[in-house]
Amino acid sequence: VGVVIPAIPLYGKEIGLSASASGIVISAPAVALLLSSRMSGQYADMARKPAMIIGMAIIAMSDAGTAFATGLPALIVARLGLGAGRCISEAGERGMLADLASKIPTFRGRALAAQQATIALGIAIGAPSGGVIIEQYG
Image (cartoon, rainbow, N blue to C red; front, side):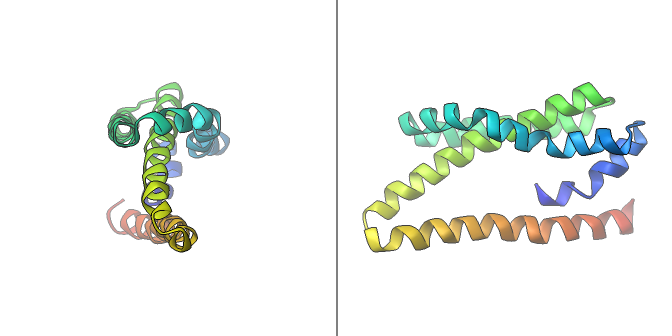
C-alpha cells in the first residue's frame, strides 16, 4: 500500500489529473475502509478465512484496475475497491489473530499491537521505497 502513494501524483499527472483529484485518489481507500468496516467485521465474524481470501482477491483486482485506469472515475473505483478489499481481509486477519490470542489472554494486547506495528512499518518503509523507485526508474 505505502509503496504506491508516491506514484499516484505522478500517475495522475500522466493521465491529466489535478493535484486535488490526486488527493481524492489517495484518500479513496480510507473512505472505503470507513464505509465498509461494519459490514466487513460482521462478515469476518462469520467466516475468518473466506474474508481474508475474498479481501485479497478484491485487492488484486483493484491493483490491476489501478494499473490500467486511464481516467479519474476508473481510478477512484479501483482505489475504493482497494480500501474495501483491505477492510474485508484485515477484519478477517484481526479476528483470527484475536481468536488465537484469546487462548493466552495475557498475550492478546501484545499480539494485536505487534500486528498493528507491522502494518505501520510496511507503510513507513513502503512510501520512501516507492519514492526511491520512482526517482530511479520514473
